[in-house]
Each structure stands twice: as C-alpha cells, then as structure tokens.
Length: 250
Length: 250
DNA sequence: GAGTGGTCTAGACCACCGT
DNA sequence: CGGTGGTCTAGACCACTCA
View 1 (cartoon, each protein chain N blue to C red):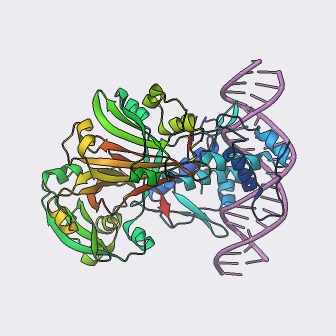
View 2 (tube, protein in one colour):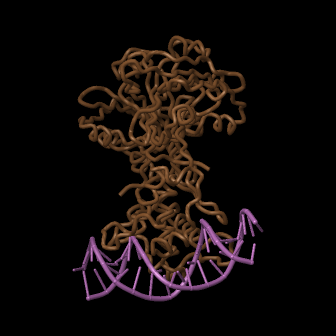
View 3 (spheres, rainbow over the protein chains, first blue to last red):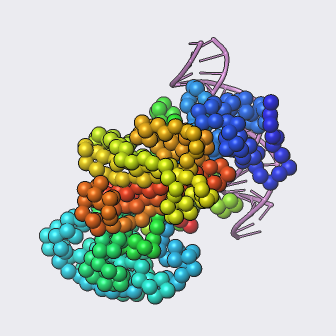
C-alpha cells in the first residue's frame, strides 16, 4: 500500500519527507482535488511515524494551501484557486539592490506648517497643531523612480535632523521624532495619472500611469501617527504574484 | 513572576491564551523588539504547560511575525517592518458579494482565430495553431467595473459552450475545454490609462487610471495554457493591506 | 558543558461527524 | 457508535550557540 518510504538516515526530517511524498501524489494527479487523504493514524501506521509527526507534515501542506482539514471528517486535497493572488511589496532600497541598481534618496523639501485640510483630517489634528512634512525623491542609477510625501505630528522643540529624514524609513522617523512606536500600518494602492510637481520630479509626461501608494501608520492606541504616500512610476514597477502550487479552497 | 495565568476551564485553548498573554506584553511594550523571550522550558514551568504546547503558541506568534526563533540562542521579539506589505486579491464575484453589490458577467465576444503576434508569443503557439479568445464585461449593480480578455489554445472539434464562458473562471474554462489542469499562475499588476474599446466598455473617459492585471496560467509541465488580462476601473478598486501587529524582521 | 530551539514518540482526552 | 481531527502531556535525542 505504501508507495515511497521514509529514509531515516537522510538529513531531511521525516515530516518533510512525508510532505514531499504527499505533494508528489497531489501534483501527479494520484490524489485529485476533493479526494480525502488517509487519516492521520493511518498515515502514521503506513509510514511508521507518530501521529504528531504526521500532523506536522499535514500542517506544512495546509499552510501551502494544498490540503485542508475538517474536524470529524478528514483531510482533503484542496482545489486550486488561481484567481486569488498575494502581492508583496519589498522596501524600495532592498528592492533596488536586488535588481542590481544603485538606489539613492534625495531630500526635496522639509517644512513645518499649518496642515492643509486634507492632511489635518487624515492625521486627526486638533486646531492649531502643526505638521512636519517632508518630500523625498527616490532614484535608481540617477533615474527618478518615485516621489514620497509624508506628514506627521510636529513636536515643538524637537530638532529636525535632515540627514535622518534623508535615509530613514517613515516609521523610524516617527518613532525617533515623536517617541511613539508605530505598530500597525494600513496601505492603499491605486493607479493614478501623474500630475503637477510629481510628473516634473519623475520626469515623465503629465497623465502617465503611476502607482499611488497611500500609507497610514498607527500607534498602539490606534492614533494615526503618520500619513503620506508614494508616487511610483508605473512603467518601472510591476506587482508580481507567483502562485506556485497555489492556495486552494474548499 | 508569572503575570497572567492560564484558565483551564476556558474554551480558549491554553496555547492560544498564552499567545494572547505574550502578544499583550509585546504590544504594551513590556517586551520590546530585540528582547528575548523566556525559553520554552521556562515558559512551560511558569504557566504549567508542556513544552509542545508552548511551542504551538510560539508558532502562532512566529507566523504572525511577532517573534522569531534562533536555534541554540532563543526566541526574540521581532522588529516591525512596516514598509513591507502583502496584498490579496479576492475573486471578483465574491468580492462584489462581500461588498453587497450584485455582480454580473456579460459575454461580449468569443471567437477562434489566428493569433495576433503578441498573443502567439505569450502562449508560445506554433505556426498555424489557433486561439480561442473571449471577452467579458464584469458589472456590479449594472455599472461596468472591469473588462476581461482571455486567450487559450483552441482545440479542434471541441464545442464552445457560451454559457460556460459566461460565468466560469478562466482556469476552469481551460481545464474543461483543453483537458489540462492549470496548477500555477503568474500575475502582473500595473497601472495604465484606459484606451479604446476598454474605455468605451467601462464608460470612462479615455486616459482614466485603470488597473491592468495580466495573468499567465501554467500546466504541470510548465506550458503556458492561458494568457489574458483584466482592466479594472481605478476609481472603484483599491488594494488594501492591513499590517496588523505586522510582519517583523531580524 | 549547559542551555537553546528543532524534532520525534507513544500515549491521552475532547468535540465533532457520519452511520 | 466508531472514526476523525484538535489539543495536550512527559518524556527523549539532536545540532547549535555561547561562555
């Protein structure tokens, strides 16, 4: 009944070997979507593994979306859900290095001022409070790639360190300047058309497709401690999602 | 020494209770990023739990990115990485229902033809092979939301079932018509400007920001079995990423 | 060498599901 | 009712790290 066997001398731990065996059976079609796997006890008997080890293996497969468990019923092969996608955005700096391009951040503007209405709303500022604003231009190989505009509460008396603003991530700037640690972030991504100063800084024609990545940072008490956005060149950034054996459903 | 305790009468399993206790200590700042947690054995003693139960709890926290383990050294509180984001795209139909809008898919065009050069390249077609193309308009509350254009190998002699094309997901259409199960997908997302027939179908001015979601579907042998794209209205769709306690690093 | 996390075992009780 | 997965226990051995 058992096809392959567990190699106890291998460096690959048994739970992972079993996962590979089962994955193979699923991808080869021996186990089809909707089919039930042998029970945990049965797999344990078949491959001479304890039940906890079998469960560790099934956890791995479940995390990858290949199988899913129903208490009281059994474990089943999932149906591929190809229309579901997960995108990951890496930090700009690392992303550029990964691509082999030399990144650079240029501080374009910094100032403290009374907030524009939109900004005051986003940061939930009280009347009279002021904002610290900064604008950075992100380049790669001296080509402008993105414009960053960020707003945060201005704390009176605190020095504004320009070199910090130049290379630190927004959340770090906030925790350094305002003594609060942002612990939650909300990011909104939309397509937009480049306009005004953004188009100028990016050296692209007005109306060109760009990404608009809006970001809210929250402190532990759910206060908004930072708001702002990136404008990325649409022709230089593509969100890619590889759905390997892919998340399943049912 | 122990702060809170495990409630053995609760319905919440002990491993989860401990996870909540530790999460609380992390979010409240009692445990700061970089701090080491008590060892697994120590936590077990402190809360009267077996080591496996403590490990299950730490797994939960590690999956959420709150902590990370170093073999031989210990388990540490992670540093928040707020600039990293993960976006998930749900299927259009479910997404609309979730929003309380009634979804509809209209089949705009279907035809079999010699492929345009671009399509032939994407699908890696041999000379003389033909493609099955279809175009769908996705609506919500009778408002056009997206245009879908999909291309796949045409298999001679197979009937083209229009009602299938109307409501089935692309990967299902392929597996039904071509007897191959797509097992991998590659998705590319870019901002674009609406043009030509797309703008007409979506009833938006040419040049409006839209999403262009390009999709490749692969069979088990890495053959491209489907290619196509969606054009989504940029004003109606926003990618949202909530980075709750957020993935950590280090 | 003492302590850490990673893995494994052979039991156990429970809630849930189908018949 | 018997079988399933979900959880828990009290041991064990290993490779690794650090003093």
